[in-house]
Length: 426
Picture 1 (tube, rainbow, N blue to C red):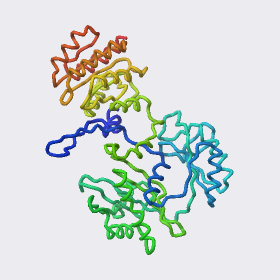
Picture 2: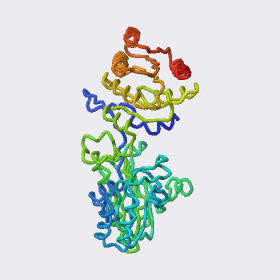
Picture 3: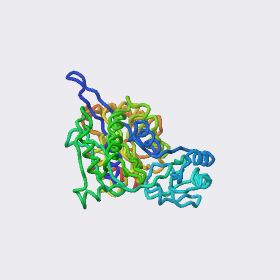
Picture 4: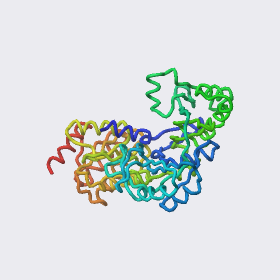
């Protein structure tokens, strides 16, 4: 359980420090991961000169029908827009099967959209109740004579971006790498110089493109979008070749450097939070990292590693974590208060375990925030607190003199035992 929490929360869970100059240290607090719908990623690529299918976006069935007519395409693909994979095999609570449909009749687009919009789509990656579809993408369907894979991503071992390509696209690239590694090609990019023409031509040849198509591939080598929007990964699968001799990016996944939000305001303004946990979204407003779990003991910590350890030791003693809430490093009293407000808003929470190791964090700030929250929120559930590190003696004095029903713990093991026992007594 803790591992699952860490996978979702590690990247956004700790405060980073960047040395700007010899005399200036800037602390950057990463935010939640930026999630874009498929049509938003396609629009970013289109704006950067990358060839994608012609498409429109619709919020109603009548808009979808009008879009289908405007495309004047031989065949149309209608895609439900949600932040989950497996849409093609999903099921709507309207009874419609599949979140992706092909048709040659514009009239059918309106009818299909009517069974998508406003209904929940359930896939292997959504909650059991599914996700309500509010938008559909109406796109020109193109035949693909050949599928390849292409990506640009950051590689720590190369200290910069790397192009990765394979003539075997449209499938799980990890499987290709495991079974036929000779079909995976890489080109290390000089982050200052960018992609050289000879590198682009070599990659085009390795992907199996010939003649005039090599130039098209060069034009679709997506370093412009990669650098332009501070991406950490742009993955195109498939990068396809049509029977008419056109190279098209049919599907793409873009990951962003969340610390670049200050200069990518237009991109981050597209962030779709409607499918996120409301508590997670609210926490992000205060630079808190919250991930809901399925237990009943709230974990209030500072640092992803400490959160994992806390979740694990609760589980070891027979309890179940209710969340993964990380304060980060530069915490203030108000954030502590907001954190408690978020935790107590979860009806599943029957006890709260505070586990703080004060390195950057001043334990006295945490203690003041805890006492303020307990009084103003009239905390009803048992509270177990373990504090260690900076100014811990002052923090313990604040808690002990508060007169509040706070249970102190000597270490993490003791804290977990007391939190589990507190629920057992209820």
